[in-house]
Each structure stands twice: as structure tokens, then as C-alpha cells.
Length: 429
Image (cartoon, rainbow, N blue to C red; front, side, top):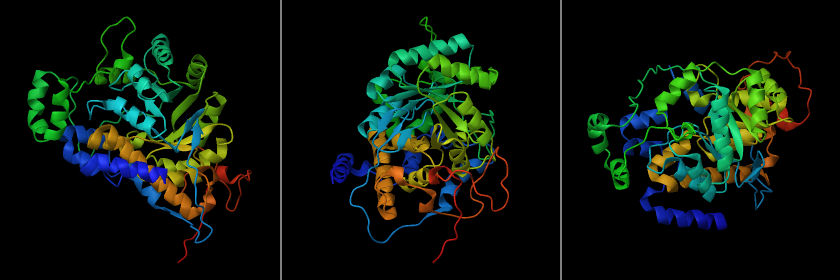
């Protein structure tokens, strides 16, 4: 009842800006200049992985009950020691300059809905401002720069109050897209402003948001500024540094985890053998993710890799799922296959583009409502009670990357339903 009143009140406050589907993407498309919108769509090469991230959820069905439904349901969980009101947290995404308040607005929205924020090291807002808006902020970094510079950045995050560290390693630096890549400038100067003026004027609401601030979109990354007070690099300057950095080894991961000394999540795991090595390296959690389809195209959807990874290491580290979440039922499917929680990237950015902080709150409300509805139909008192038995999973759905192929008819050793490969089932009328 309280949640219904909260959402109803927010709908009235938002007026016509309220939307009922996370596919606020359409509204974002109308309001953003085309290059900005296309940067959110992203993806790589043919977009096979981008599409599979979405399509895979549609291959999973539910096995609902008709009687004995529960009147109250608990959506809360914990991730890396942080109590969350719902099993959804914000994924780290770079340069959220689709709105003047950027990551600060997203952080406030997450705090208002009782969940955590992960801040990209490529963000457009300083970590100090984001932590002030949401104390449950994790700092994300890539393996870039020499070790001493990495430590300087981590110490800044620690001093700001970051509650955990996320290391993202999956990236193959594929630049081509069959539908074309957006032109994003290195910096916004007078020449760039003149070039993009027609696009900006064609989207007056976006333009006026920025005009009221007296600033133009800032494409620098303040969290990578040198500690001596020098200027922050541009996004593409930081991206170039990342491209030229030697790839991290497992020894590097262990070293970074030891230097941080607190909750540590490794993001981008898709293989069972990598998940096991992450456990050996001492990480606290892993995120099953293919970088939202922006990495190596042809990689399966993250949700397909989740069951095998959860079965292999879910009793040793926390397992999260990042990729393709568009509705609350998607969240429930991920939890039933072994995830503790999910992370959202594009969905929160579309909400931000559509209506700022209120738009992100809108997205989180939609997901919360969908989770609650699915739990009701599945006769579950808590998100922690979900198992693969709540789903209809067709043969061939899951992918066991980096794991030995099981003999036909073989059963996994564990009997814990949250950490075994998904059962297959044939849907009936």
C-alpha cells in the first residue's frame, strides 16, 4: 500500500513525464540529439550480442501458481554488505552527459529508491559529489595506467567514501557498427557547438536543460584527474590510455584486490573457468556481463552464461547479472537462475534522458513493480526464495562457456537448486 501511494504520488508530480515501461528509450530518442542517443544504443559490429541480451529473456517462461498467493513480499537483498530495498543496482556507465546533472541525478534516484550506485571511472561527475548524493556508491575502474596511478585513483575513491571497488576487464575495442557509429567530439568547443547546433536546436528540451545551467556538456573525466590538480583528461584521452595499457593478469587482479582491501567485484565474467580463477584471486563478487553487447560480438547473452557460473561458484562469491534487463520479470528470471541481484545501465540512462532524476526513479519503480508482480504469481515470499523450478527453460537455452561438456543425462554434484544448471522443461498448454 505504501509503495502504491508513493508511486501514485510520484506519477502526479511527474505529470505527463511519467512512463509505464522501461522502454523510455523511445522518449529518450525523441529528446536527445541523434549522436547522443546513438551513443546510448551502442553495441558492436553486427549487434548479435546486443540483440541476444534482450531475446534470451523472452525464451524463459514462468510456472505460476493459481492459489495460495502471498499477501506480502520481501524484495530486499544485500550486495557486498550493502542493504538494498530491491535486487537492482545501477551499473557503471561512462559520461552520463545526457542530462546536466548526470551521475549525480542517477545517484539521488538510486538513494531515493533504496539501492546502490556504481560510478564509472569515466563518469562526468566527481566521485565526491556522487557519494554525497548516495553513500552506497561503488567505484569502478579499468586496468589502465601504471600501478601507482591506479592506486592514486583508488585512494581518492576510498577517501570519498566509496563502499566497494569494481574492476571491469571485458573489452576487445571493436569500433565498427553495421548501423554506423555516432560522431562524438573529443571536447565541446565553439567549432563543435557550431557543427552540432542544428541537432541541438531540433531537440529544444535537451538544449534548454543545458542552456539553463550556463554550461555545455563536459566530455572530461574528472575522476581520472591527476592528484596534483592538473586538468582531467577527456573521455577519448582516457579511452586511449586504456587501449594502450597492457591487459591485466590474474596476478594483477589479486594485487589490486589486496590493495583495495574491501568489497571487490570483478565485472565481465562469462566463462566458468574465469569465475573459478576469480574466486582463487580472492574477489568478493563477480558480475556475469558481456559489456552490454559492446564487447566481442557473438558472445552469448549474459543470462545464458549465468546458470553454469552460479552453479560453479555461487556458494563462494556473490554472483550478479548485468545485461538486457528491461522489466521486473527479467530481474526475477535472473535471480531464479542464481543471481543475487542485477545491474542496469541503458535502462537508467534512458530514464535520465527522459526526465532526469525523476526518470531514473520512474525506471526503478517500474522494475520494483514488475518484481513484486512476478513474486505474487510465483507464490514467493521473498526474492531469496526463487529457484530454477519457477521457470520454464527450453533445452539448449544455457551456455556453459569454459566448462567441460557434461555427459548426456549427467547431473551436477550439488543439490542446491540455486546453484545448479537450469532444469529444462517443455511448456504445456
